[in-house]
Image (cartoon, rainbow, N blue to C red; front, top):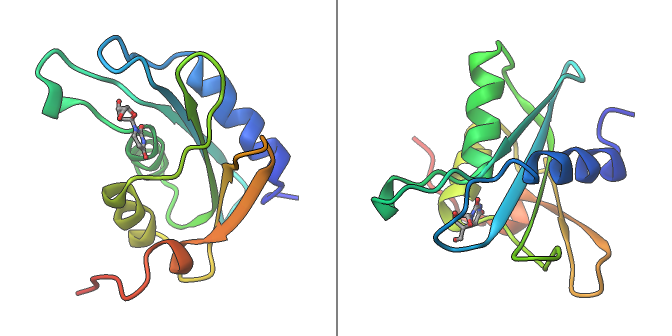
Length: 131
Ligand code: THU
């Protein structure tokens, strides 16, 4: 099933291994599946000029678009310093997700007990900006 939470979290974890986070030490991985079932991954890529750093979600979504994917069916992000910690997409990434999703699109993340939580982007970004 293309929106399988465990598979998406596992793929996000794999991408997290490649995170470049020497400044924060907080490594994030992300996996996106599009409506055709294709999966794309991303990790955070920090920079010595701190504001130039890129979030894992932005990278995964950018890879989806650059690969011809159109719409996010589901997305997972995992992050942490040494071990995985609860990690919720930042405000900017919520807006990035919504650009290619609808209110009901599911966003998977790790909760306080290490469990996979499922949210919708509509819950995470209510009354969002749209043109
Ligand atoms: N980060 C992400 O990659 N995604 C988020 O949604 C939140 C934060 C990254 C940015 C930075 O490299 C590190 O986590 C610490 O903020």
